[in-house]
Each structure stands twice: as C-alpha cells, then as structure tokens.
Image (cartoon, rainbow, N blue to C red; front, side, top):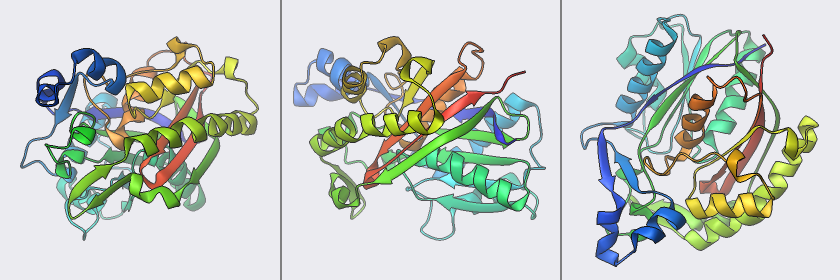
Length: 308
C-alpha cells in the first residue's frame, strides 16, 4: 500500500516583521496577530527561483530519510508560480538534481488545495502504472507576484517549499478524498499582469460556507466522526479563517493546528509543513487534511497512521 513515508521542507532565511510593515497602514499589532495571524513572513532571495526552492526541499527530504532517492519513479511539483511558462518546474528540478532519465516528471497547477489534490493524484498515478516510489513537491512563492504596497496580500503570504516521499512503507495512508470548485469566483484571488489581487471577503465567505460541508462529506466517506479525528490540518489561510472554521464546526480548538504565525500563508506548502511535524507524533492516528483557496478550489482527505 502506498502512502506518505516522510516530508522535508525548505524555509527561506529572510524574515519580514509584519508589525513594522503594518505601521504604514496604522494597523495595530493585535489585529495583525489575531485576525491576519501572521507576525512575520518568510521571503525567498530575489535571485532564488521556484525550482531552486524545490531542489532545497528535495535535499532536505534526502537528508532526513538518509536515502539517495535516485531510485524514485516519478517527481511531481505543485506550483502556479513557475520559473518559466515553458518548461515545467519538475523538469527543471529533475535536471538540477541529476536524476535518472527514467524518472517521470509533471506539474500540477493548483494553489491552496494543491497538496491534497497532489497526494491523491500521485498515489493514484503510481498505483495505476505500478510505480513504488515518488516525490511530491510544493513550491509556490507568492513574493513573485505580490505588490508590496497592497496591504490585502503583502501581510499574508510567505514563501516555503516541501517535498513528500510517497512509498510502500508509509507512516500515513490516505482515504476519503472529496474535492470541488467554485470557478465562478475566480476573481476572488487572481494574478493579472504579474500582480496578485485578492478579495478577502469573498475568500472568507467561500471558506466559511463551503468547508464545513466538505469536512462532513469527507468524514462520511471515510466512515468517521469528528471526535475520531486527532487533528485538523486546514490550509493556513489566515488566523480569522481558522478561528471561524473551528467555531462553526464546534471543533476542539486544540485540534485545529496552526503554523502560519512565523511563516505566513505558504499556499500549497501550508498543509505539508504542518504534516511534517505530525509524522513523529505517534499519538496522531487520524488526521483530516483540508485545502481551499485560489480557483476557487477545495479538497479534503483523511490521513490514517499505519499500524505497526
């Protein structure tokens, strides 16, 4: 059975203090910390490309597993901010790492829901063609497209990359996948002429009204109850969104994991950054992963710890 064996991550060293940035709009630190939920953000170097971040995440995974990973069958990158329109980022990563020509590569153009979609796409692809080992990378640096004078986006998004090893000896397996889209709301988060624009109210309303039902569908498909979930790994959209989801679904706040305060909303990397920390916690048997945002796209699934 294929599933998640390990996760490595890359976090840029550049940290931006949101309290200082917020002063230009006279935003109080309390508002930044509680509503936005991001005290500081990570930003890549100016000359650092998406593929560079992906390579560093892959190398972190390689160091963590102690495996050279040259025997992987497939490499997939989730991103909507590639180095170039052509070629695909996964091909660039393949070349930079010097992986064997036998390794298949492709990209998935999804944002905040991308990790959950990517997991299920990659596992299904591997099972269908008989592959045994693959790597799913998330790398979507929004600093490429953010206007530093736009308070709706500059205080929220951060840069990061993750690499997830999929293999036959998993810590977590997946089930209960449910996905969907509200494509008519495309302008809620859109990049035109190289600059990101966001309607925060539309994004919030989408999450607050759609995600509770999505979670219920996922639990029904997996034949689980809310009480049987040890932790909820929601996309780290903002502090206010996380608070709202916990309140509307009457979740135990301690089960709703948070990881955006010192990183930012890292788009497709937000869930695997949380999951990386959970792998070592054997008490976390059953997790619910839920990504939502740009597209407007959403996806949810269960991660079940494999019994030893």
